[in-house]
Image 1: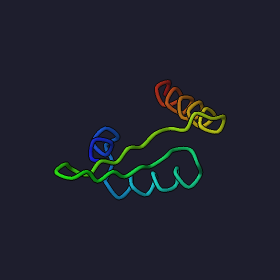
Image 2 (image 1 turned 45 degrees about the horizontal axis):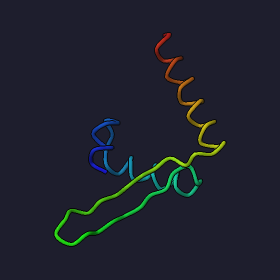
Image 3 (image 1 turned 60 degrees about the vertical axis):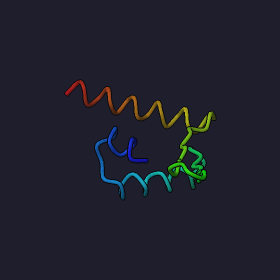
Length: 69
């Protein structure tokens, strides 16, 4: 989770809230793993379906629009 926070340049609470929203919408899966003698691990995966593809296309369009201006 902290790696994701660092990569997107946002605060932990913002990223956590958005992950909950995306998981509730079925766009991602959010798995928690607690292994003995290891740190807690949280695995976040994109679902490979039509809705996810549409969301990624929209985000790419927004990024391209930002680069044009």
